[in-house]
Length: 497
Image 1 (spheres, rainbow, N blue to C red):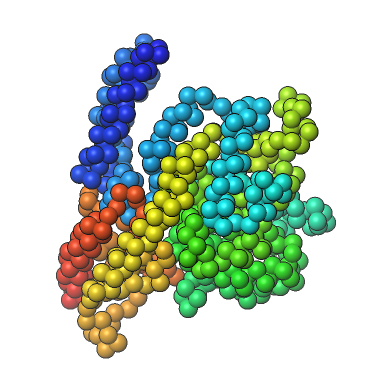
Image 2 (tube, one colour):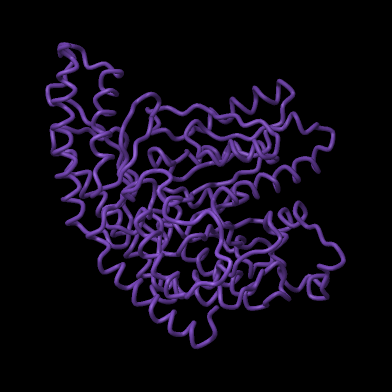
């Protein structure tokens, strides 16, 4: 067991090893080069009876754990969406862990509660959110949830509570959650957890996969006529598959006519671009400020704050606390009863919470608004570079408009034309792209993933790691071209069989 001096020594060594890790990161394979079950062969099947020297434990992190780690901060990591890890956030996590506050009410650690309210106001103002969303307004406020899925589930619980109080005669089995066919799985999972129905409204390629207000209006009329009760719509700014943005201005007009419909805006990945004023119009910030009941973006994706850190803002905090306030006697305090403080246990599903605000505060102070904006603009610049290189190649096509730092593309035969023989059908091109993706996915020096856009198999390039530079984009395109040439030759052989 470590005493203070032992911890001091181990801590210094850990920092040295973390620095060495980041210095060597670009030379490591992006994806863990292990097979399922590898760890069970290296670790005993029972805990040791006697404690082991900590130096041996720390050594095993290097020998046993790191080989099985996929390196999300690698400059050639382009899968899913980026996950941030800054040194400021790492140090903040260390400090937060050292004081181990469970944070369920103000008395647990007043600084933890008050810093969360202040830091979320800082971030909200950086994003251009209306003052009604700030804790200092006394109306709304921000809370740091673990993930966007937690933010969404919390919003659905609050929306359900609000709707059932307005319409106590409506049975729960009639309630419906709305999303779209491009909404993240968090919507369907919220319905699964709560025993409700999720309806995915259709979107069209012609609308760049964003939901139109008319589609929402028609669905509301259909379901209400059928005796059903849609009570929340999960709008998206930056879908996972293509970066699509729902037509929020049109949706806002529908919301005016249907005031009982809660609008939750899930901007888990793309919301941080609101820090740059030039992107606020395309993200429909005015509509968010005018009509959204809740808004979410993840700092831990593209926003420089270490996982986990999902920012959620609400227009009316009472809608959260009315739905989630359960206060047995042992949790009562004079400060909470007076209404002078926030007890964040009533803004979330769990009772306790980590001191996540510390890392947000550290990052915002260290980078400043300008540094934060520079990071976002850098990712978008690199995506523009990637898109231009892909467009210049006859082997590829971009299948949906590039969205901030996300580009979705696929491989096509350079001879593609309507009279080609055999015909380049969707199934045939999907087969080609599956071959292409297989070749790319087994490489250790890049990581990207696939998606499906209404039956079209394609690949998505998600840029945003802090250490990615233009050289890594050029290297990625060169690699993709090599694998495209290989896949085309393999595909052409299948056509002659």
